Length: 128
Image 1 (cartoon, one colour):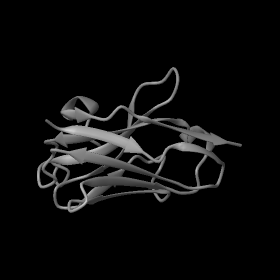
Image 2 (cartoon, rainbow, N blue to C red; image 1 turned 90 degrees about the horizontal axis):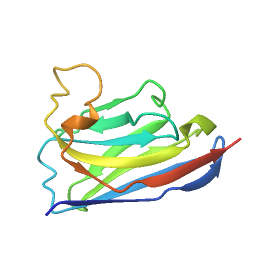
Image 3 (tube, rainbow, N blue to C red; image 1 turned 90 degrees about the vertical axis):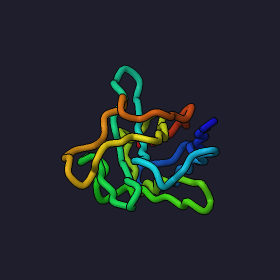
């Protein structure tokens, strides 16, 4: 049984950094895409970043140049390094796994419905 668990959320001032980590037990990292989503109060869940089985990455325009997604198959972790944080980055952040989205030939980020496994989320709050 696959289980995803996020950690590393918290409160930070604008301009600061946080590193989110997701441990995916029971999941084969050589499979499909893994990614990070976020959902702010009153807003829809949105894709933030994705990494495919070969390490190719893609980011939402709103975080490009500030966030970095990475994975470590040996440690079973999926990380999101967030720098230069802004108040509008405040949200619950979710990790997700096993989207068959073909990053190399398809533009954009994988929709949420394409992911099979989800974590419970971790809160990120950025104050101005």
